[in-house]
Amino acid sequence: MSDFSFIQLADPQFGMFASSSGKTSEEIDAFAKRGLTIRKAPRISGFAAETALFTRAIERANSLKPAFIVVCGDMVNEAANDEQTAEVKRIAALLDDSIALHWVPGNHDVAFDHETPTPQAVDRYRSHFGPDYYAFSFGDVRFVIINSTVLTSPETMPSEAKTQLAFIEAEAKLAKSQNSNRIVLFSHHPLFVKLPDEDDNPWSIKKQYRTPILKIAADHEIAANFAGHWHRNNVARANGIEVVASGPVGYPLGNDPSGYRIVSVTSTKIKHEYHSLETG
Image (cartoon, rainbow, N blue to C red):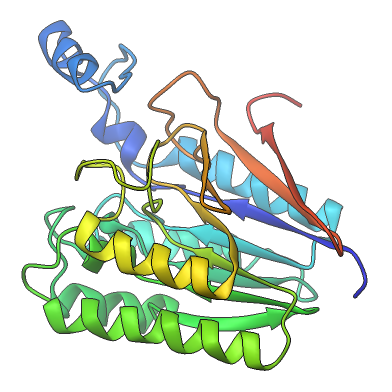
């Protein structure tokens, strides 16, 4: 297998700069108690900041010529907003035709309330971005993309959650039977934040679905899970899998800048490094 690299993006989230602006000190303090950093800023509208950052990310990709780009969810801030969706797709179309682009659904893309996915929201996502779960190969690595929102708040779509668990297992078995060197899982929510057996929390896949996925990962040697959702960087390792939540293209909620991750794949390793979009 020839060595290759890909670029992981997460959370361009068109509209979040505006929705996070104009907050009172009390509102900012309330976010801080939840571990979220909201910056004091005058009220704005639109998505000029997201346009600039996502355009810069696409320009970097066109310069670096990776094998492909994957966007790990929350392309928009409001799932029903046609203007946000249109702008994301307009900028994505600037990507060089030689570079494949793979979308991953986030909670803001498939849940009108940002939390609970609905068939209507998922159908809308599929009409704009394509399947919400699928797989592809590059070299001898199998990449599996899932809709993790149905695994974090599955109340309205339990059948979708079961279908995706079966899909992950089927893809893992297929990859192993075809002698794929490794399997990599892409999602919006990471499998876990610190530990595989951590309690349910707003930032990772629910334990009732995390546990069987980790069993599949152990049985079929899933090497890594690349995700977003945190709007900051977080890396955890356990039981042979590395779980990477990457910082945002768009609005940061921690100390990491808006940025992108370059992932380098060799015959023996998967290495990655985060780069800022706020400089140069």
